[in-house]
Length: 336
Ligand SMILES: C[S@@+](CC[C@H](N)C(=O)[O-])C[C@H]1O[C@@H](n2cnc3c(N)ncnc32)[C@H](O)[C@@H]1O
Image (cartoon, rainbow, N blue to C red; front, side):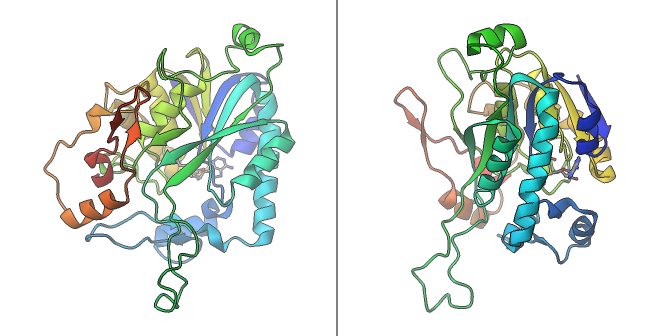
């Protein structure tokens, strides 16, 4: 069950009843300006501004990405103020012990963590979403031949999802769990805690075909994360920057109640249509394991060039916690 609100989440949070939400999972506009009316117009026009088009690979068109390196010092301060105010408005709306998971960027996450800590949250950890990224790894611009052995920054292959908690009100986590049903995270299973590294992939084409949002997150990752946010599986998950609704779709698939807020009318309308369709994908996958068998390819593979390039970049193997090293990167995930 879910409720959607077409609103500015700052206004919405001001009017929200105290202690009414048990968890937050969200992918905010952490460059702050990329979802302002001006920048969204440039994105929709396909040119200029903070959005850039990544290189085409094997003839396949890529989604635009926000270019955070263009943020000035003043904009970084604005970003910290944005999260400071957001955190202060969010805190009273949450029950004690509620977890808040926020998608970030390695170069900006310290600003968000500092602002959230000042707003009264505990900084717990960050969950790494491993995926193929276009971030970093380049040689110095216009001097590539002069410095062939140099990369300006490390090649990126993770997205940090910062984890915060509203301080518990009881003496122990156990007492907080009994009173508020929050304070901890839900394990994958009895013998597997939630790991802080989750092999992911880029959002599959079949999901992007349903929801045309430049920041649509994959259901595989979102279901694992959203499920973990309610330790006893009870309560409401909020996404205040819902976009086209991947968090709410994940909550639906997992069987949780959720609330979404979105400012942009186009994305809001898209979310209404996309959530049930995204939630209906992979009906056997409810985020309680790392593998997603249902994501195996259903159509013949095309684009060998793209495949070999992406596989070469993809994380190779992960221990499954029982001593077995297995390749977790599904061909379908890197391809689709
Ligand atoms: C990074 S996107 C989220 C995309 C989402 N993860 C998905 O899968 O579709 C952030 C969203 O926050 C929205 N947004 C920006 N400022 C907002 C605000 N003040 N209140 C509510 N939504 C806002 C933007 O329009 C954008 O759709």
